[in-house]
Length: 188
DNA sequence: CGATTTTGACCCGCGC
DNA sequence: GCGCGGGTCAAAATCG
Image (tube, rainbow, N blue to C red):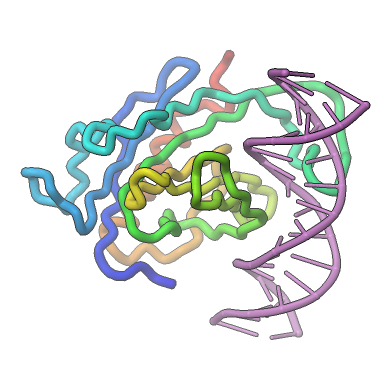
């Protein structure tokens, strides 16, 4: 299940501020049509240019409950109000595989077809105990090469996998910087 | 044999 | 109230 060969995990290039922020990643893999060389985390204005996707990936902070278990499938367990917002990061990547390994262990818990999209969306959850970070992976119909990964929540534990190559290390740094810079829940 | 994926059912919010 | 779209659960199946 490892990736074919060259997946370049890029980093973010947007300051985390305000109530809504986006994170764009662009790893040009295979179709490195850019002038600059592909590899190395260029973070050169990857901001949704070439892939002029209409709906862009602007995710803003959504409101959500604090408790872990909540409505959804079979279990209807609800609790007192206490609504806080969970941040959601949209991470757009150019890759041929859906599974972007970010160093965490994910367990898939659902898959749904989205409207206007012929590819299904997959729902994952962090397998670490007590860490209910979720992510969903979607692939655009327009550009088969674009994969949108949306993270929700913040990890509260170190990365599990062994980081043996440069890209993983960079990804770690990226994630840690997010964790540090962002308070548990950024005010309103 | 335990952990993870698959997949249909179920739940919820929202618009009509 | 009903249907739809989106999100989650959980049992069975599959994987390592």
